[in-house]
Amino acid sequence: MNSMYMILFFLCSYIIGAIPFGLIAGKVIKGVDVRDYGSGNIGATNVIRVCGKPIGYLVFVLDVLKGFIPTFLASHLLFKGFDNEVTGWLTVICGVLAVLGHTFSCFLKFKGGKGVCTALGVIIGLDWRGALIGYGVFLLVLAITRYVSLGSILGALSVFLMFVFVKYFNSPLAYKVVGGILFLGIIFTHKSNIQRLLNGTESKFGQKINTEDNGDDKK
Image: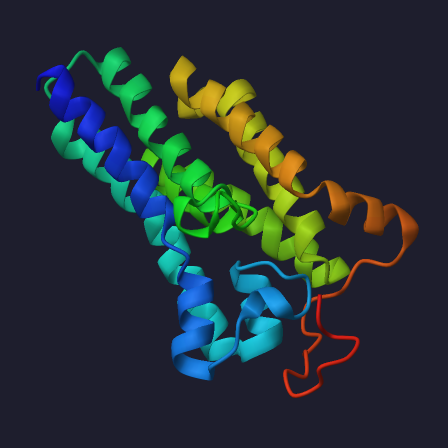
């Protein structure tokens, strides 16, 4: 593969990640702009609050696929002929670009979601075992605390720690680096959530937003 095709796929990875499925689903199916309600976020959690679980779970799957598809194609098709180490680095670049696309979408004036679902898709594309552990930690924390943000942060941390310290998985350096990058990125996009967690004002999972109320629910 020549450098032009490589750069083109990097660009495609970003554009795929930048598709705002949460915004599209809210407008097309419910006729609402999810950015005007709840947290104002286009991610699955806010879509669940604003539009209900069926639409929110659909957005969850689509946002995961945004990270999985570029990563899987890069690893198993486009860069397969390279040396394993090179393939690993090229693959994680595609994954990171997909997450950056979701977080800084070119379709939303470089604003977007917090990148958790898309990051999960990237980890599935790299090592499904890491994704299983991370998602398991997320579900456990969510079940205990009902805080999606806390579950997301600790889930990302568990993936990073697994890639770095669990020798059984034999993770290449590229996976360790991307695990750290994604964890720090999720910390960055959850700064306001962390502050609300410390203040005891963070919203819990399952709280419904009334989209017919134009008052306090709007951002």
